[in-house]
Amino acid sequence: MLSVRSLFTEYANEGGGAVKAVQNVSFEVPEGKLFTLLGPSGCGKTTTLRSIAGLEKPTAGEIEADGRLVYSSEKGIFVAPNRRNFGMVFQSYAIWPHMNVFQNAAFPLEVRKLRKKDIRERVMRVLHAVALEDLADRDATKLSGGQQQRLALARALVMEPQLLLLDEPLSNLDAKLRDRMRSELKRLQRDLNLTTVYVTHDQTEALALSHEIAVMNEGRVVQIGTPRQIYEQPSDRFVADFVGSTNFIGGTVTALGDGCCVVSSAMGEIKAHASEGVDKNAKVVVSVRPEDVELSETQPMASDVDTVCKGTIQAKDFLGDYLDFHVKVGDVVLLAKAHPSLRTPTGDSIYVRMKADKCVAISSQ
Image 1 (cartoon, rainbow, N blue to C red):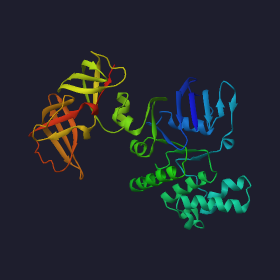
Image 2: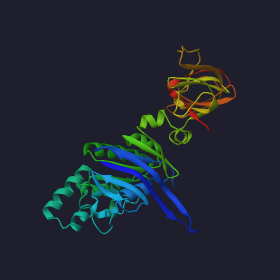
Image 3: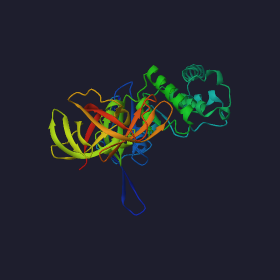
Image 4: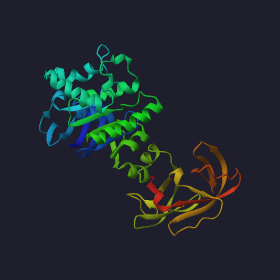
């Protein structure tokens, strides 16, 4: 449905130089899928989204939607935003305060001068989809934050867009409402089979909503994959650190084969999955998530691909449904998540097991 190819966007700064906002960004979004651009502030994700919408004119590259070029630097094509048939929801919902719910949702259709009967049918259909049909006559200013977010979504959907673009639409909501709206948005996207590009800096949002994620940093896409691939097999230290919390253990690769490696580290030998570009004798960091650091008071059964060692509990924090343990193994302190039923006291010894497929060796050079 959407293909972005070799996209570059540059701005002139005050000193006369160029700010490289987007550099060689390429990705494809299949029909009916939700694709997320994830990264920190200033990484180029919103600029990429605005370029797709036609609100920014890139420096170079191509953007194609459903087989139709809407931008091409080489062919001199730039289709105006209002002719792209894309729906967009901004971080600020831009609800018209002098209109009620129905009028807000109907406004894009009235601009197009559709018949009143057709407008009413389409508006009530989308208001039903976002569970606002009973509030059609309510003033927009009397809606809650979550209701305003759904109204902004309804206004985008009423155009029956071939592509939906969402720019951090949940960032203005409180934590509980954000979680609830995230679930509603996921249901709506799948029920209506909406091809969607979603921008966020929130890793939890990206992991929960997406079919596929592109992690961006300093204007570039550094990894594209499913949420599980991004989380479990990060391509570099930035991705591992940005998406979730992790332990980093420095070391040197002493053996390599069949995508696996052995790393000599300050906590002993670690068996790990070798990411792309890792060679024998290379300096690496091993990334292992806290929930994959398994703790037990008795020595666990271990296969040939497990790393088992003994450590000392330095500290632990009770966080309700789990405990955070800080375990010192050799010269390394590991963060581990464990069930509250594990009551080993601080200062006692404990066994650590890490499975090789949950440890990822990433080049540090």
